[in-house]
Image 1: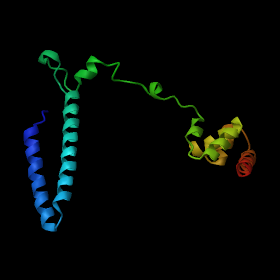
Image 2: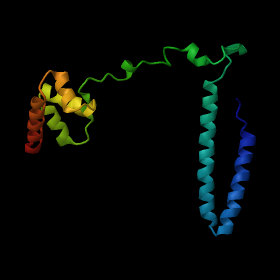
Image 3: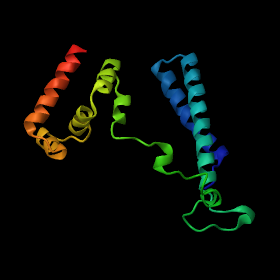
Image 4: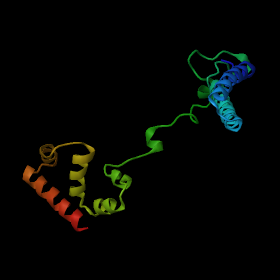
Length: 160
């Protein structure tokens, strides 16, 4: 789909002239109206650039005007490896990497000081949303043992 700059710019100018008349009638000073015009025109140009570039990606014709399969992007077909990625290429998260995303430095230090089994309990409770009974079942421990671990962790946090 082509972008017709001249007609779009004319629409923009007509709309802004209506806005200018309403603003002047409401008592807005000319300097403020001009600042708004400059801002709106810059946004109009950004929108035009976005639409123009987006349309180029969705072009349905290849070089020499040969028609590409309907629904397929020419650039995606020409450069499939450069325009695709898989999740592991972007990010590989481990089970306990949420510790690095904590906002509080104190909380991060505390979480890093936990043993592997304590960290697993916190992961089950917070990340996986399990209750104590489910955690106990998952870790092959009694519910009382999980409760004691949680109490020890609470104590170590309030001491730290």
